Image 1: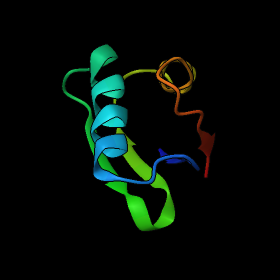
Image 2: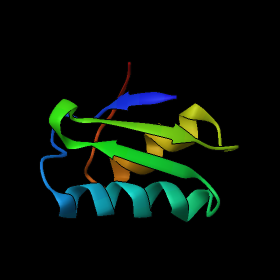
Image 3: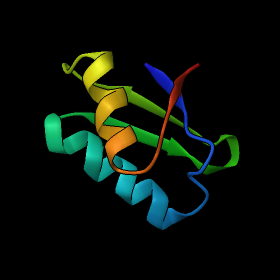
Image 4: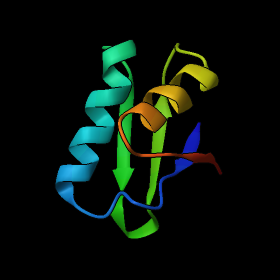
Length: 64
């Protein structure tokens, strides 16, 4: 899935987003793209769970 995260603006943000996603699926593949404020995620976790954990981490996301 590809998610748009408007407030992911730096490497620290990208690390926080990756950490949040991997907190519910440690084997998730997370590819941040800071220029597009987007992240590509390959995970077995549900889309709802991913969106919720990002919201809780302070990085609300929308599905691209």
